[in-house]
Length: 283
Image 1 (cartoon, rainbow, N blue to C red):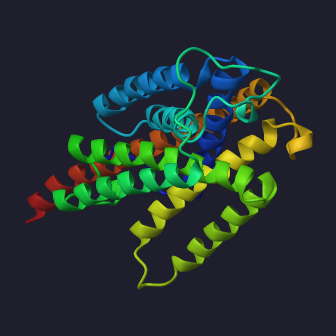
Image 2: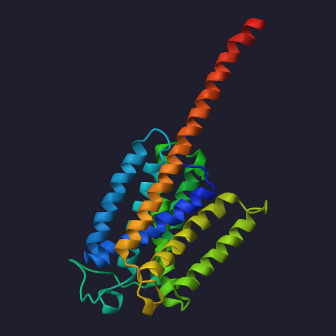
Image 3: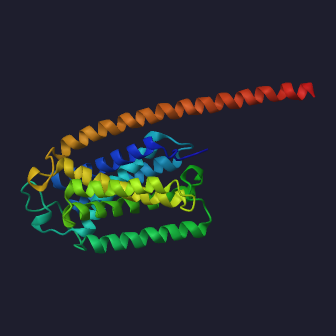
């Protein structure tokens, strides 16, 4: 039985919604509530493990389980990236805060160094995946080992995407809207490349999966950051609440569609089984 969803337009809409919510929710816990990157990363990584166990124990694809794991990887990826790339200096603090939570507040690697580490780690995961001989097509992943590799790649890719999004928003000079426009342009190029037979669709999928994370990161920052910095200053609490409601609505829609699809498949299988004895009798 399939454990992962079909890749459709609805899939990408939900992915962007989940990653945008991951950005605002991660910042909500780490910055607005001032838990800090260290404690928040530990808590959100634990949440990721819990949601992953539920997904792995599920016997077939369940939209609520799947997208909850995607959301948890996005939230954990946000604070993991911030912890790697930032430090305790005031330029990374918001709302007049002078400190964040307990423990170290960042390794201060910087966005280029942090992205290089994450890219290397992601390539190692894909190398191990390739050597295992298992498929990269997510609709054909049905084994525990295949799912474990898939979710490892998802966690690292969402963390990498956060670093890329923060670099585009904060360090490149493009700003939030400029960074989002650049990523959107690259994604449109990927859509065009889908029509080129020489370019594997699996490769395009994973590139798009990584790039939709910085799109969500820049969109989340645009919603929450102060107007003086180019944002809408809607706040992490309000933005997260609206995005969560939208994501749950999309998950409910996907759940209804999945149940209808399963019912249709079951009815088709029953009809096939009913016809077989009749054909056997005629012979």
